[in-house]
Length: 450
Image (cartoon, rainbow, N blue to C red; front, side, top):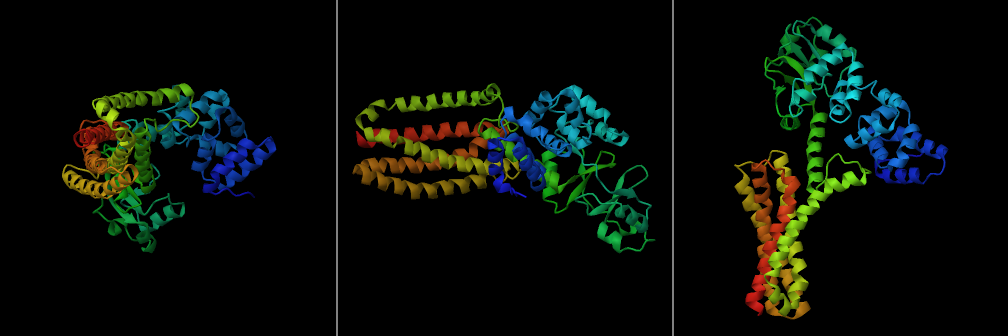
């Protein structure tokens, strides 16, 4: 068998695209299905150009098709449903569970959602209806229903019989509920196993436990679970009725969603954009930010134009301008990345923002002193002009400090204004560092070199 570890995924993609026989492609896919995770099989499928995807899809077995389908990005998922015959498309939805349907319903056409809902059994339908009581930004919409809950009257012997039937992943405890479904305690599975069969679970229960509420913010709840040192936390409604749980795996997936979205938006992209999305869609997604960047570039150029006479007389200034702009942009982007990540994770608050600002200013000053000296020395060796060297040294120092300041202040202001700093922060930051760098450098050049 050919093995394709994760770091060899690019080689598998190349092999598939370069194959000239269906038999060879089929062999490669059989090997891939036995060695790659579902997530990486989905990445593999999305890395295939659209004109070749359908052929690859038809070579996969039905179970793998379903697993890949529910893990695809929204764009790819919608493309697949629109490309397949209706009979094949509907077949993909036959085995969709509640959690998968809740994710798919935001993407796929309503007729497919209606079909998938009809395939749910009575218990799943109740779970789906429960989720619909909460908007997508609240935890109640995304509950995990694979949960161990028993009556508070049950004995350890009865609980052991339940455990023998199987334990859901990330289960450390059994939740105790009243006849009306209210959560009143939890018992560690290890304690149940060690207990005598006649022991009542209430005598083993921990009543001092933490729970989440269905109307909690989804991403804030995820952070609570991550920092709880528990494998899962129960979720209750306003009446303390146990509804489901949020596992540590789901919590980390939600955190990763925030990171992926921030990374995509920083480049003016949509997080769910298909690698092979249509030219029109990709151009539309990215074009608006190119326009915004163009406007800011003209603003920076206008400031440069104010010093046109200086540049004409001292050509070296024009040669060195990209150095000033680049150093400021990189320094600012580093600070911006740290602050945006901190904001996304809830680590940056009004209470610690000033301390962060002071720290980043010190970082900017230290790097400014070091690299300003290096650049000043190189400039002197290149042009043999002491005043030009002094000019760029001071400009680099001031621009790196200004970049650190902007990297903290800009995302903080945008966050206060309810504007995603990952989406627009980098564009504004680049404009600020360019203008500060050019004005400082060219202004000092006018004073010291003419």
